[in-house]
Structure formats: structure tokens, C-alpha cells
Image (cartoon, rainbow, N blue to C red; front, side, top):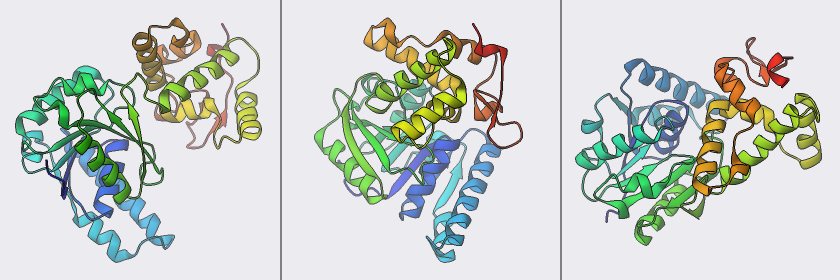
Length: 300
């Protein structure tokens, strides 16, 4: 097993992928960022550059650090080429099980035999993903949180066959990139989403049943429970489609109807009201800032 990780390939140039690439590059690793879209790769590099500039202005890093970080990242549209010399591959593609299984089969076929294969999935079984490869002992969950450069937590999820050596390597690696790793076992939703998503779902039920309004629910949780962001605002930030998908994973995986997504959540996703990314969710973001809104969707 390769314990000297130097070359990291990140699959997916979206919000999570570019954040993960940023963190590894800033910590001195050679990073290859992969996406099928050249435009997505250009946007990712632009976002990383802007985030680094913000850090320079806040005097958290120097201009030299920024230049070194950007020079440590190269881009690639061919997955097979990108993983050929990787010590670690971190998959951060869309939360779709069929897509992830295909990606892991492709990574497994092209990455060096000693490479560790990690997934940033927030809910999909690590054991199931690992079974798509010929190296299940070297597959692990490395669940970062958004925004990746800021959030300290990394859930390190062991699949059924993940080895102790791989787990320890990833725990140490997370610390090396400035994160706080927490080891958990492979159950639906892991820890973060098993606790968070039912809370968000219950907040949506409270709105659906007319217990209180959007702002009122969020204010109670912020001021009463010391949450930095209310659950409905957080759902908008995560993406209501993602929240619904994770609730369905919990419902199926745990075999309990109490995890079924609230009908209002399903209705909003069907209407394309997905939160920040669509410009409208429980709040209105069309003007670039969070605004309170009233919608017929909030009534039964």
C-alpha cells in the first residue's frame, strides 16, 4: 500500500470538486482536476483563483502561496489519463449511484494498483461502490463539507472491506490538509445526513402543516438552538433535490417510512424550486441575496 500520497486526482469540477482540489493544492499536493467539460474546468480554476485572492486580501496566505497553489493544479478531460499516476483519486461527481459505479469501474481499470480510491458521496453505500472495483479494500468515503476550503469536518467512511491501513492513511491525510477527520461506518446517511436530513425534513413538515412560517422556523433554530443557519435556509443551500434524494436513500436503506421526504419537499423539487442553485426555494435568491417569499407551494 502506498503511504506516501503526493499525486491526487479529483473527479468532478463542480462546487465540491473545485473545493477539494483547492484544499489539496494549497497543502502542497500535485492535483489533477478532471471533468468532461472544458468550460466547467475553466470555471473551477476561476473560482479557486478568486477564493485564493480573497484569502490573500484577508492575509491568511501570501500572493506567493496563491501562485504556488494555482501552479499545483492541472486539468484533464480524460479520466483514464488523469488517474494513471495518481496515489489517491477523490471522486466528487453528481450524487447518482449509477454514475458513481461507472466512474469507479473506470478509475479501477486505469489507476495504479496501489492507489487509494475515495468518494465524496454524502449518502451512497461505500461498500456498494467498492464492489464495482477489484480493490474493495482500497475504497473509502472521504465526505467533505461545503464550502470545502472553510469547513473543517471530513467524514471518513469505511466500507465493509476497507482496510485499517487505508483508513489510517486517509485519517492522517485529512489532518495534513487542515481538516478534522471523524471515522464512521458504512450506514445510510453516515452520521451527518442521518441526523441532519430528518431535522430538515421535520422543519419542512412544520411548514407544510402550518405550525409556523419559513422565517419563524429558521429563527427558532438559529436563536433557540444556536444553529448558524436555519434548516430551511440550509436546505436551500444544499439543494432541495439533494435533500429529497438523501431522504429516499435513508428511507430505502433503513427500511423505515419515517424517513420519507415531506410531500412539500417533493412538490418543490417537481416544480424546479431547488434552492440557491435555481434562484428560488424556501427563500428567493433571484436578486443575488436571500429574500423572504410567499408561495402557493407552501400550502397543501
